[in-house]
Image (cartoon, rainbow, N blue to C red; front, side, top):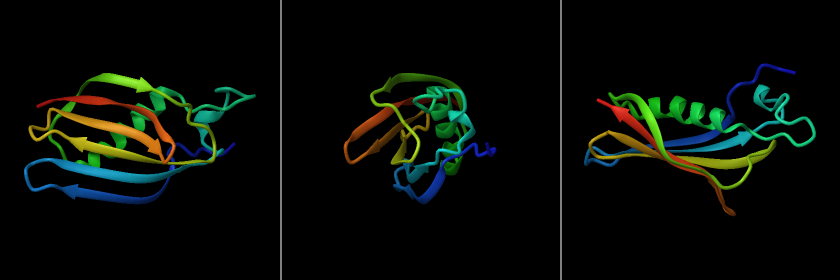
Length: 120
């Protein structure tokens, strides 16, 4: 199996809303070749939640915020992310940059959502 660690980013849009708030949206394709599917679970591959949080932290860097990770709140997993899914990840920083809300979703609803808390 190849060492693919990140989803295939099909497109990205980053906005600075002018009020100190920043948002970003990514269109992602989740290939079967992701190393994270190996062994989780062989008969029905599912993307682990910890990997989803890792991806959120990776993409938060695009918002160029100064805070450091201090925790996660309101984390919810509503649907399983499986191979070959095409979905969106949206990020939205609060005006004071103390948290970033995230949501993995497609036209049929949400896969996961929550808030990343940042320490300034």
